[in-house]
Length: 290
Image (cartoon, rainbow, N blue to C red; front, side, top):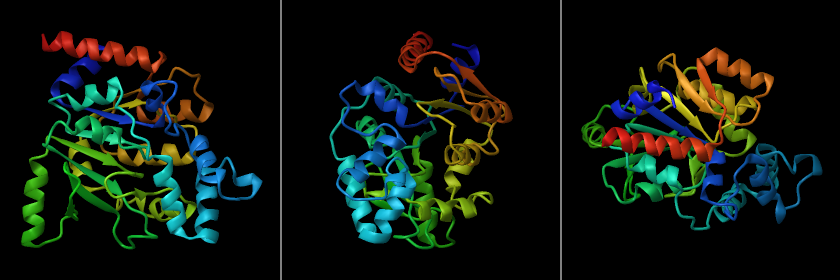
């Protein structure tokens, strides 16, 4: 492991950005879908959709939303992520870091919340679907799951109070796609992402707290791929105006688009199994603490 990662972890300038692949660390029998294709299979297992959409998560969700109502999509998503799964060693390790101002979780499960539950000095900000919350891009929650309201800089006394509260959070958990907990907010259909991508170039859907914290920091991508335009767009916009050096654990051979993305953003590929990297990361942190 590079000295730069060790240093960034110790001084609070490392931002972990974890994706669905991290669920593999919970064990081979994990009941939660750990990829877009697996989740698409869950959504279409009991709902009829055209064959060409069955492996397409956003397209299948859009078809269900159009013909079965948005409430059906939400119910299926809640069912897909309702199983109670213990956080992995990585989740617990990250939750235990004293210098972790920002943690990005780009999937729908609630394992980060479960890992952070032993603390109270953290908060959550989640992306919202415009189909359910038109005109509101995000919602903030306290560690107990209660909503704090919008922290996007509304000029009133309540917003000032809430901003002061958020400033006391040692860790901000950012879930750009939403999450099953605490309020089952999901960005999953084609229309959900069209709304977001229309505005994301000018950073409107990115929470102000995330913009503030990410400045000058390094991102470490774990359990993520950059093989689709959607994955690349979100990673690009979330890490915008951060540092010029980042890392991604990618044991699989990257695609040509992924290699281009890594080069464009100064992301160094770490070609080792995620489980091995996490073991080394945790061991390094313990050695530094000692």
